[in-house]
Length: 200
Image (cartoon, rainbow, N blue to C red; front, side, top):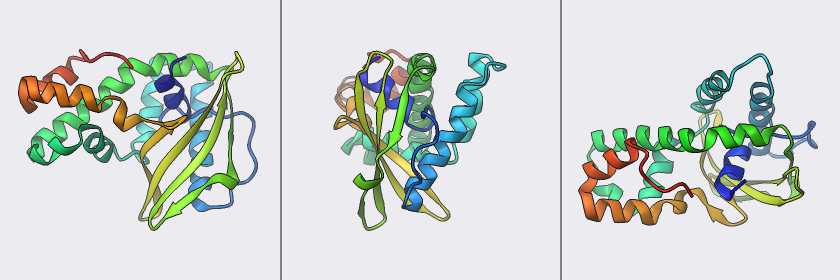
């Protein structure tokens, strides 16, 4: 399991947890725990096909993931040059690409992964929060995953996550930068739609 698959395994939409962890102390931690518990029920439901699981997880995750902010951070500085339609198109394509590339491996890893939230390691900076958890795979490998969230109304929106310090939004940034230089914004969007980027 590579780092991004591990991240997807831990994040919404692919968050998996061991039997219920210690009660979270902060509302952001409580929500992440709730997200994990809900996704766990879907991911380990033997009556559902893989496609059904992915569809249900995606529908649930739409409430908690800020896909446009994730996309903007992954693109970086060139994002300011995107039109409103280009931003919408890129966000949809990036979301679809990530799900297509990593959903299967994340679900396969769900059966044996164990996860615990680290309640004493949370950080806060104004309206931004980092909630930490630890994933252990069947082989014994451990990953620390930090969910980065901000408060939006009654929920906390996830806009990034890091696996052992490696950030999702920076994983593809160099590829996006090079694509935009070579093909322009529309060409980059087309490449993401065709899922022709390298799997990280």
